[in-house]
Length: 479
Ligand SMILES: Nc1ncnc2c1ncn2[C@@H]1O[C@H](COP(=O)(O)OP(=O)(O)OP(=O)(O)O)[C@@H](O)[C@H]1O
Image (cartoon, rainbow, N blue to C red):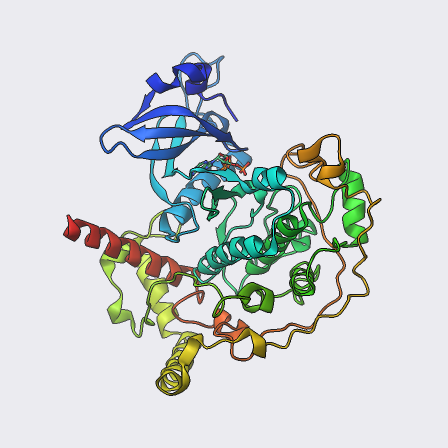
């Protein structure tokens, strides 16, 4: 990317730099799209993290041999990079979840974008693991439940992250998780496929590496599996000194577990790291897995607000539609027409009907024997076996342990951060039986056919936009 003029000034002078209402304090990090700086709002005094992205790389800088500024033709790559920034902003602005970094505002200068995010006072999960070695399963479960909750929230809103990795998960002092960087995220539609190659280093799902079309959520489950493996094992599932070797290993598809990993945890990982996306666990299965719910009354709360189905086009609020910006959905009239088409479609109406039936049944159950949150892990049929293809821990294997190495922190992540956006791939795992408890309040069918979440990206954006406006209204009233 182009050099940020702010950065030509040394960091020590940064405290004097102001951007809009913010004073820049210091660098927090750097990513492929730009630098992230700690900033303080001049009037409210609150700290924010501002991602500064140069627009020079997007063709906004006039060519130097020109006799003055003139229109500068953008190429397709530039356009998609610029679209990526705007998509990150549009998607993140909609999301409201305790484990997802919120976007406060975005402003655009002639040479730069400034994305003003909530400041997370924490460290990257990568550094957290490096400094501690492996993490106890109990702590890992806390992390996994928060990551899972955030992913479920996203998926139920037709958003797929596509770049979940250790660098995009921040851990606070209270060991709470915040997921950042929705720069590669997208809206998905379960009835259609995405085909863009995304994700960093070790984390992309096999179907992304193979370049085959994919629907979305399962690629996050894969990356989540790699993250969870790394958290509990203290090293990435596949590692090598260089990419070709790494690819070879991945294609070999052998997954090794250290001896200290519990059977339950191994089973969960073996369901997440399944190369065939159609037999890989759904997020519902992951969140209901006995390992995930151990010590809890059920799967993590996705923090979705209460929603009712939109029962007819008459309930559509034009004020909401007018605010559905940033996704190329078309004009207000087009959005309204498309939403009307969805609400009047047979598939939507039948899903609403099923939703009503299901909720009636659930509320009857609730009146009687405890209702929808009565999931009991003990009732789950955990089919854990000592997987034949799971190789026992081999102390001499190339997946060196951090503590054994002369270079403690990085040896378990030898190419991590060495390659830019690069491929990594997976593992042949036994297609273990899914173990979704029948009483689990989440299930695949519901995930795919809930009129209030995940039914269609346009509907999800409508709900999310309405919720933002409601929050803003509530904030105004409380002043
Ligand atoms: N909200 C935040 N609070 C604190 N630190 C942050 C925040 N956002 C980002 N950072 C720091 O800046 C780094 C880069 O941020 P981010 O991953 O969003 O940038 P990027 O350019 O999109 O990166 P990528 O190469 O993954 O696309 C993060 O790894 C983190 O250390």
